[in-house]
Each structure stands twice: as C-alpha cells, then as structure tokens.
Image (cartoon, rainbow, N blue to C red; front, side, top):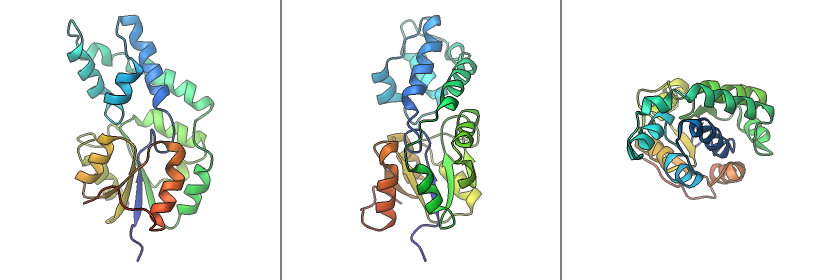
Length: 211
C-alpha cells in the first residue's frame, strides 16, 4: 500500500507562478479609486488568503477606513484583466505536464485554491492540464477558506481520499492542510514543485508537517 492515496495541490505558487500577476492586476484596478497595493504587503500578508479577506484587511487598515465592498466591486474588472493576460501564456513551469502524467493513475489529484474557478480552470485547460485533476475546490466551494481546514477536507471528500498529501507554498495554505489532519509538503515556488514532490514521494525527504 502506498503512503498516500491522493495529492492535493494548491494552485498559485505551486502549479503556476501567478501571484505577481494577481498583485499587478489588483493594483491596476484599485489605483483609479485611490487605493495603493504594494508588492511587499501583498507578498507578506495576502498570498494564500481569499481576495475578500485581503480587501477587508486593506479597508480596515486604510486612513480613513474604507468600505471593503466598494473595493470588492472592482473584482470583476480584476478577474477579466487577469484572465486575459494569463490565458495568453500561462506561466506553468517546464516539466509540470510530465510530472502530472507520471502521477496520473498512481494518485488521485485535485486542485485546492482560494482563487475563483473562472480564473483557474481556463488556465489549466489552456495548458492542457485540466484532465489530470479529478476535482477542484475553489473560492466558493468550501464554507470557510484557508487557513480553515474546509477546502482540503472537501477535496479529500470529493476524491474519497483517506491519506492525501497536501502541496502548498503559503503559511495559510499549510495551516489549512495541517488543520485537516493531512501531511503537508511546503514548496518555496512553483519551479521547485516537481523536484521536491518526487523526492517526498520517493521517501527521501522528511515531511514538512502533518496530522
């Protein structure tokens, strides 16, 4: 019996290097209404959390305080800007398709992300990768978002998985996987996912966390 029966992948920062583009698109749509989103704040505070939580945090911390729903009203523009730019050339790392092909049939796989399905699924389809994932849990698919365990518990339920391995890059995502009781492999960026995952599955790397 293999150690794991499924692999649950975060999306941004694990399968694709899209966080800089998320930030750039949010910064562009918020600037006309007088809101500045700098990269340092986004990188340290916003990666791995739901966009609405990010905007609530920004609205509360601004001087004077803003209505977060006014910021959220810019989401459709951000979503379309992001999609148009990312579909042109999805920034999937070289070798990702080969990794997923290698894992297919050995493990059930899912994408578990705080991003919206309209942002994620078209990119996977454009990259020819959607076929490898039996399930997707996106922003609206769980009652609570990361770092709560709900997204990973939902993914395991959809796959009927009892021993999944979670692959994450953010603190919030890793906390979500551990809260669900699953082992978590933390990767620093999407370019290193394939190497570190192969090493973990071969048993040559120590677990990064688990339950």
